[in-house]
Image (cartoon, rainbow, N blue to C red; front, side):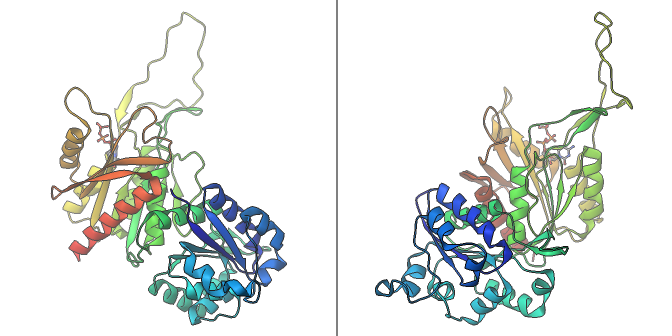
Length: 414
Ligand code: CTP
């Protein structure tokens, strides 16, 4: 991606120290970063830290370098403003359009996307004043991330933690890659996403698994949550991905557990996104104790397999039977290699017909493609026969294009 000008605003909260990681990740991605902290942010992290990490001067007020008119120029020239952490006070000042320091002046003059990553105590986040401010900022087109839940300063826990730096910078990169802002168009939509690979036990220490990393499904959950959806994520094995902020996450192991979790949540959902790599077969008789290899020459064990339920096809059937009256869109994923019978698209078209879902995301897989990597490409097939290419991009950018298609599909259902 070409070098962009990013302003990182830092408000005065304990999470200000995490802004250093955000700045480092954005500069390492090749962007030009300028940090604009508030006066109180500098009580938590010194200006020298931000100057060293960004390679740019750091000021809080509008009276430094006055000849360059920084309170106007910095915002005007920016391609993106990221405020991390955005405290309750900063959100309030941004909402009413104050310009009482360099950061708020920059927010008033910026015409580029603005991304707020909130961090504050749960009571402050849930206060009607903050809720109104967040709603106003979103209505004006700013992106206000949902804070993460978890341990806050002291013994408190609840929503209000700054989302992980990687989540903030991933979203920042998405905003730079998209030529328009991320719409807040899925508010009120309940989405169920599955991600990652299932593990089918052979014995207490061994399993049959697959190479799915869960990255594409996590990106789907993250992007849909940022567009306002109420997202539940059923996660199989994901090799340590960070759970997306503002998403309800349930971790499962086997295909049967994933199926049960989907059955539990599907009746509430308006959208089902089956990005998980669900095992088609499982060992018929998983051993209670560890299988011993025994002396050489005594033969090799054979694992008998039985077929797992097809969760996606089951959801399509349940909807047709009237059991999922809220369900509007069912999205499947297919990883294909092509073979002697036909290419990737040939198999994908057949799979769309066989599964009966509304949209099918298709990836060509193989050596160094799709699995475990951060980039992807493919096609999006729709039950109405339309097909579009998903051009190569980060899994977050791909997720954002798929979500555009889901949002368009939901509009046709309305
Ligand atoms: N899927 C599912 N339950 C299964 C297997 C797959 O819900 N037991 C879902 C996946 O989550 C995905 C879609 O079905 O959304 C396609 O998965 P894939 O493994 O490509 O399909 P299969 O029907 O298993 O076809 P194949 O013979 O190509 O493996």
